[in-house]
Amino acid sequence: VCCPQRFFPSEFGNDVDRVHAVEPAKSAFETKANIRRAIEAEGIPYTYVASNYFAGYFLPTLAQPGQFAPPPPKDKVFIYGDGNPKAVFNNEDDIGTFTIRAVDDPRTLNKILYIKPPKNIYSFNEL
Image (cartoon, rainbow, N blue to C red):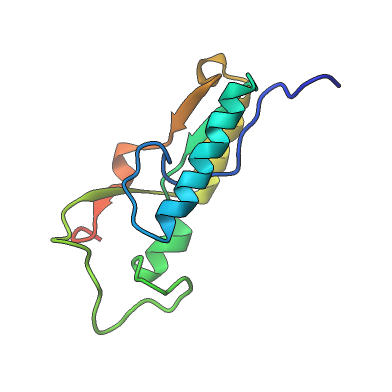
């Protein structure tokens, strides 16, 4: 075997080249961006998957800081900012389906695949 046919880095989540994060996430995103640049510099065929938020991971707790497992909050919820900015919450099975379909789709070669169905976009206030 000579070379990989296409590399799908395990960086599911936000597009690390476009996210504006604060620490500690900022450092993690910078590391992922550096890995992207190395892949591109070596000429390795790739597809980056920007799947946004995993619904099963974030929605049970309403994405509360420090809570990564049920139960959901009962008496109060921390809302970032005014609660109006939108985010994409995708079902993990759908992320897998779109990713597998991208393997044989030449349109995704050396591109970023954004998984962003309109019906999956909500603000914290809408949740």
